[in-house]
Length: 403
Image (tube, rainbow, N blue to C red):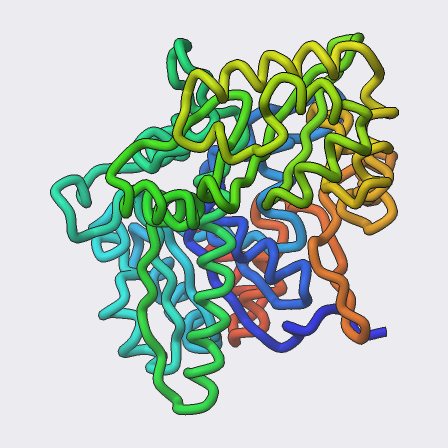
């Protein structure tokens, strides 16, 4: 069976970290031929991040699986010449260096588009390039801090913090993945390449979705904490989390008075809710005291039983509900396993299979195929032979530390 719908697509990436590598890792999963350019003296520093005993770098493996590693000293004319030959044959080029660095090192857009006018050039920055901080380097935490995520998951009365999952990096990577393929469609139809600029900050703003729109239109920060209260008094909505009697958390989400009644009846809470004056959920929309009172009542009710029972009762009432998983629980969730969102990949050099991300897509005809990350410079010879270098020339380049 063919491997992936991106067979035949050629990608060159001068990228590091996460947002700059994940777009091309996803393309490699889907069959693209991806060459990652690294420095000869140690390569991407990500290779040395979170290296587990007897295994490898979780950071590098997750973000670079399935790609090819070619080492180039781009400070030399020969190194730049090799990069340009690779770009001549490429469909997509990606970089995420600090603004200005690409131009200094021979892979700015204006230079590369002369070599390949059809090239789709993806550039990722921290802040975007047009604002007062566009010249600064960026990280996931910086984008989370500026983009509103810390507030979105904050608890009233406690300090706001950025989270451990790299949501800015990952969301930016997915936008880069989609944007690159959209531009590739245009390039193949018209022969015209183009530059796409994205940023970690821009990705987080998009990630905040309709809640961001509501905040702007109301000119008021949202209520945060245990519950997300949405809608209007006539059409209220709630997404809220509670602990069971053993302290295990769950969540349910609903919209509208009908689903509120269904949920409370399904749980066996309706009588208590009605007696307390909350038969109509809309009373909490613009009333903080009522909201706090209702959540306290629900806390006490959920604390009388177990999570599995509550989730089943809610689902039986056709109300969306789920246990709140830890990361480890998520990796073993039956739906995650059944759909291949995590899988096992063979690591021959380690002599074992390891559990890794699967793929979020299921293609009926061209399935994705997760690979493993390359050794540093593993594909120097094959890549250079393909663009016309001889084995003798490659040996000379290696001896002179150009590759």
